[in-house]
Image 1 (spheres, rainbow, N blue to C red):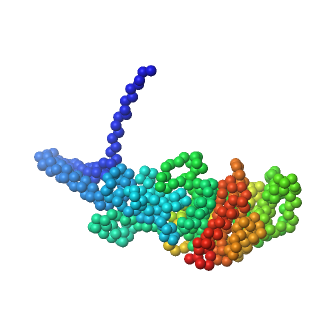
Image 2: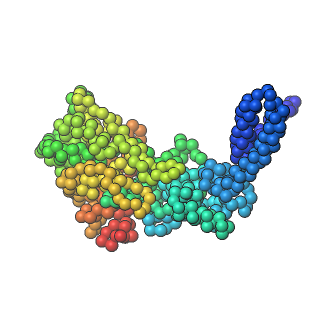
Length: 531
């Protein structure tokens, strides 16, 4: 077979590195050329000889000015180029000199709330960063990589961490002293609200299963843990297609949209309490059939009895507490229809479900949650209303918003602005519930842990309030949910646990949350000795 001679492609000349030099020269020459044209017209034909003299003079001045402009501009990026993120990134990626200034910069550390280092410069590899909790903090801390750029907190607060922020006179003074002393530039450190122990534990307990954990201080909005599993290695963030390896780059805690299942009965119950409509209903074994539908909504006991070859007898004269504690689908579907579509349609604004919450805002970007997807229910859509009342149908929420719901109940109905940066003054974001309603919801959640579906969350000498949720999915096993807060008398942590396709919540999500709460008390994150 004859060989085919393949000619190499023509070389491509990249002029991008010359842009910083050419820009001032072109500007100066262009300005002087314009001045020359104007001068020529001002003299006219009679001054042709003078024009020639002026043209030669201006040409010489233009050459000198162009070189001067290049030198001045070069001196600015030599001295202050680190204050220009795009230029610094370009040089950091292409400059291979071991003693280049941008390579001897000391980038600031990222710390947890207790001062534990989450990210810092690698002392053994120039230009590299180390991430002490690895994939557990990848979605929040992010990464700073010479090839793959920046993400997360590393991106949002890049100017502060790199030491090139000029927001105050102190920043300018710091840069001036650094330049005069010929010392390497040192970036500022950043302290987060995250507790590294809780973050690592939550990630380890998920054990690679797709899911999320969010923990919040109810009365400050501090985010103690924000975990998405699976994750990636921030020290080597090689791009991975989203459809492979269970999408490790996807932040399930902030961006994941899921049917909430029975934890959403918390919203339906709160609406009923505030409306003063607390009926006692019968929950027959055949279930509840909303108008205009053909498939009845049944309690989970109906299917459990059926698997054992028995018949579920149903319940008679069921009140709100019994229905909530035992998570009755029939009761809450019926209750949602009785309340009507108006209270449901108001929850998007009232519970802030339609908001994309910003958690950290920096010069180069932000970290924020997605907004929930709450359908608008019409008067004649009783079937859809019944499904949404039990957390099914077209209703989709993020784990983060469900953690905020638990946090608001724990804080007597007040939702504080969630935040990732430590030390800022807590601010009230919204009044979600009346304090009396929040108190009654707390009692319902306490009874659910004491004698209901969340009994595995009972912890000795620690009052826990919680609600389980098992959400049906089109494919695979149900999603397992659990929302909780503790201690009941003085709530210091509110959390949500989601295990994708985890099946029954009491077997997957609840034990995980219980272990988190036990360790949080052991480490004095919550309890009498908590800070």
